[in-house]
Length: 101
Image (cartoon, rainbow, N blue to C red; front, side):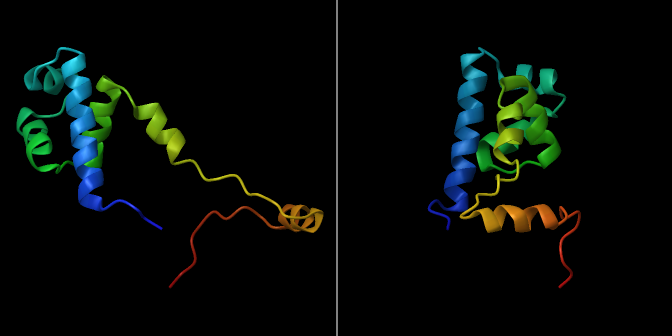
């Protein structure tokens, strides 16, 4: 269940990137140059929160947080309730693809 709206997440991400940029004493131009993200793209991101995933990851690689994002998206470890659950999980193969719908 999601307890925060997408627009709030978007705003928090923008604010966090901007704050990290300012802590590093970088101008928008400086961050754009270091990251390889075009300046208009960075400005649009800081004003409207819109950016491609590729550009967002480039920004994170400069201001920090890229590894944390990758770690946060790792699949969760399976928890077991009984020894039977453990034995059943060993029999199942790891999924490589999603199911068709």
